[in-house]
Amino acid sequence: DGLDSVRIGYFGNITHATPLVANQKGFFQKALGGTEAKYAVFNAGPSEIEALNSGSIDIGWIGPSPAINGYTKSGGRNLRIVGGSASGGVKLVVNPDKIKTLEDVKGKRIATPQLGNTQDVAFLNWIAEQGWKVDAQSGKGDVTVVRSDNKVTPNAYRSGSVDGAWVPEPTASRLVAEGGKVLLDESALWPDEKFVITNIIVSQKFLKEHPKAVQAVLQASVGTNAWITANPDEAKAAANAQLEKDSGKALPADVLDPAWESIRVTDDPLAATLDAEADHAVKAGLLEQPDLNGIYDLTLLNKVLKAKGKPPVDDAGLGVE
Image 1 (cartoon, one colour):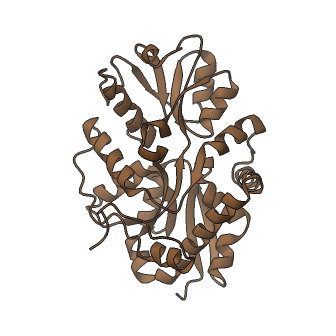
Image 2 (image 1 turned 120 degrees about the vertical axis):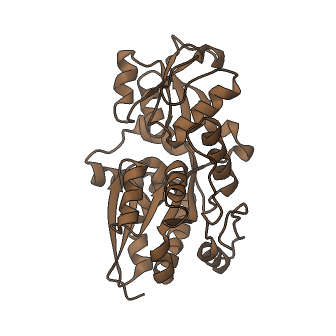
């Protein structure tokens, strides 16, 4: 596509195993050939969406809530989801001295990463399903929802200022290493125990102008996922090596091993679960009913899958017409 470089964004987080491994092993660069793969590492979805909107990245790995919010805030004009990346990797971890059963969560202080983020929405939905009441904005009610950055949640747990947390990996396994107990794995709440935790997004402008580059990145993603599945231990080490390179700190084995076990890489964006997550945000009062028609364009992904002899994936009726 005549590009000097393709700028790829992702989080320094084990739920972004695909780009971590693909960067570390040079799979993106191999697929892009003479076009340089450049990288930007983010801590939060909103900043990655801003980078995509401003053109400082072209393609990004991101969670469902920021993708939904970014798409709806722009009136459906800024991004498309072009592929899936990971399912699972979210747990409710609690202090076993204070919380022994799911019923015991009532009246306790439970952390989520951010108001309106993917895990916050999931926890608020679960609370509502128990018949308990919580004001979504303030987090006050039958359960106190404490919005706490994943980096500080283990300290909050250690000090006793929260009794548990509904968090993604590797924060969940960090809490377990602090003596916490997994009370619920979110995958148990979903059909086939699958739900989207990480998608691949691209700016609509970049997708329109540079489809060959997008296809090359998707080809690398599909190839990386197959390599991860075939070489789990080597892939885990590669992901951790890239985490260390990006953040200066590798994950210790007692955190990395259980975190890695709970994540499933997938090419399928699990579109029906994204639609359900949007409904949960609406029910919680954090999102007005969104129009998600056109949020997906899986044309290039299905082309890549077909070439590899794999079945196509579905956009749950939310694809471009």
